[in-house]
Length: 226
Ligand code: CA
Image (cartoon, rainbow, N blue to C red; front, side):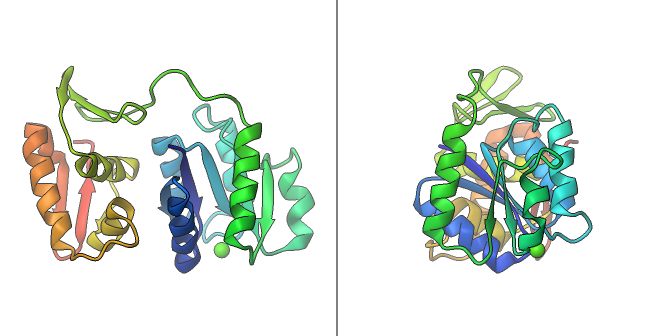
């Protein structure tokens, strides 16, 4: 399954894009500003990044340049989302390093075609399993395995996705609503207590490391390195 990181400050648009991509079998991660996007790009090693040009705090062009300079993200394909035709030459040129661009407003079909084309062009899949490490927890994102001190922790798919979602945005609070959307999907009709129940189970399975999942009362959860 390919992971697409969506860095876009228009929340409705980001969620709509995520919804459409998930329907097509992609996994999605949303970041709503540049700083969060940079962090998510490092953490989640996405297969492709959709990057809004106009972001608060950091322009998409700056972010793209930064991604290119960092070893972990240097080769990840980037499609720039832009509303400004005049910027396009600069965006797709080597100056910034984006692979392609799409002009807003775009149709879901148009976006999917563009993503497929860019992925086809990008390098063959990395061979080694990708791993995210949080304290003693090692999450193998390709094999869907979690290990603590070399011992495998058997998680359900939902628990795995929940842990991965928290790990990809380490140190950042995620609301129950957001977790519900990212883990259970947009069509899920349930209440946020579902999230609490699964967090409880996940904590138990992780043993001592379960304490790294912090509860933010009345809001949500975050995973901390220590
Ligand atoms: Ca924007």
